[in-house]
Length: 222
Image 1: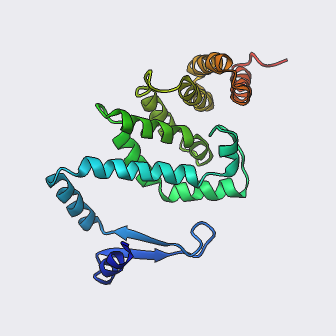
Image 2: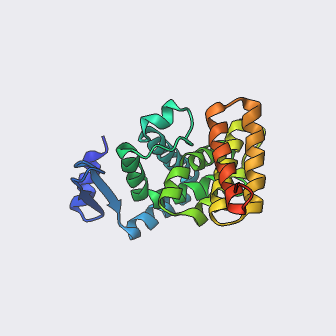
Image 3: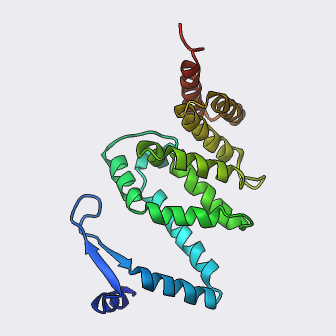
């Protein structure tokens, strides 16, 4: 049990505790390490060659957090492309916003050059689940950067569906930026994959995005 250790660190002013009673945390206590202590801890982890294992656990924890706290509809649809803007979805996104800096750190580690297959898988899966959050909170530029970075880490070990899911999200973001040529290419590639997979819900979603691109370019007008 790490709670006594945490409370001891709080008592020595080495860790800060913050309890919130709003609906996002519902009385949950959040612990923050002081920056100087965090830097010292990272130095010690590096000294004892434990930094990789620490980063891996950190990234895996965040992936678990994102998936397990996601709305039921996203799991039931078997696709993070399910856009359901209910109260539970809003709560989920607010909690991700609180952890966004941690998410960024995890993605940077998992999608770095030369990373291992397990780290790549964690990073790509995180990217796949964060599209709705990124577009709702207007992180379009950052989202596109992470999504394109994730594509570089998708190889034959990944399911075709994973590539298609990320590609169609890229198309959606590119269209929002007016980059219609790239959006069309991304959407068409995803559509072909979803057709081959016979993934009907995702094919429908991809067709909606493709139609939006056509409207943007003027080809969808009557």
